[in-house]
Length: 263
Image (cartoon, rainbow, N blue to C red):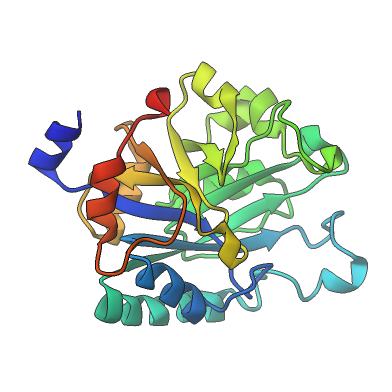
C-alpha cells in the first residue's frame, strides 16, 4: 500500500483540528503556524469553536465573548488567511481555515462537536447542530465528527460528546470521524467501518504529539477538502516528538505510514 502511495503522491502530514486564542487555544494563529511549520507539517487546519449563544458549558458572563461569533467571524477568517500566506512563504505549510461547530448540551447524549474544514462562512449552531452541518456541507466544507465518544473513559463523564455514536441521522452528515483524538481511541468508529482520520485537537504545545492524518493528495486547499469529503482512504501515523529539523512532514510520514488496523 505504501509503495502505491509513493508512486502516486507523497502523503501529506496533516493537523486537521487545532485551536488558537480565537477560542480556547493558548497560541495565536501566527504562533500556531510557526509551531507546526517549524516541525515540518504539510497541512494545518485552524478550527476554533463556534458555540450556541446559550451554551450551558460556559459561564453566563463568557457567552458574549468566547469563540468565533458572528460579529468576529470575518476578522477570524481574515487572520487565518493572512497567516496562510506567510505559512506558505516561510515553511511551505498549507493552512486551511475552518471552525469547530460546537453543540454542548446538559447531557452527553445531546452533545456533539464537528470540525468543518474549509468553512469560511458563518454557520450558527443556535438552532441545532444538524442545521449547522447542512449549512457547512452546502458551503463545500469537509465535516469531521470530533472526539465522538461512546463509552470511552473521560475525567468528566458529563462532558463526553456522545451524540454521533448514538444518532445515525446525525452521523450521515459527517464525511469523516476521528478514530483518534490525540491518543484517545474511539473504537466504535473502526467497528462500524466509518471513514476515519486522526487529529491533535491542539490547544497547547503539549498537544503537538499523538496521532495524525496522512492524505495522499495534492498540496492544495481545495484538494485536501475534496479528499476529506470523498470516500477515499485516509491513513494515520503517530508523532511522538517534534520532527527532526530539516525533515519534511511528507518524508517522515511516508516512513511511518500505517493504517488503523496496523496500529
